[in-house]
Image (cartoon, rainbow, N blue to C red; front, top):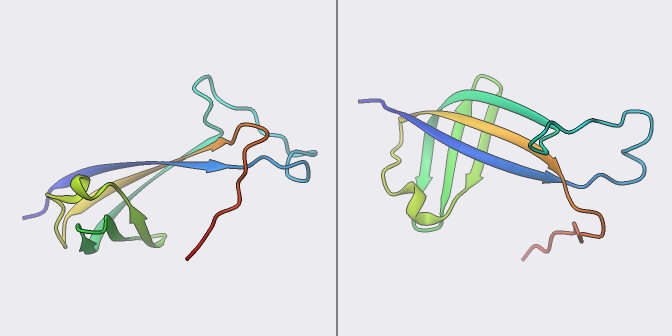
Length: 99
């Protein structure tokens, strides 16, 4: 049995000097610069670590959530992924530290 699951994701993006030149984007009233929605199917779930893989017509994604959020998510579930892009506050360190 397939069921719909709504997975909202907020992606923070740094607006650097070079990115904010002639193509400056105007944020919507809620501060979001852009939104995108895709329907897909769950292909893999690691609920202990909080990872879920989703295949959409636009490609595959590996997404991370708090582990408890994936308790009822199963391989084969139909999901909707909503992406939003917001600027990071100026002065925010946007470097990611990887292991």
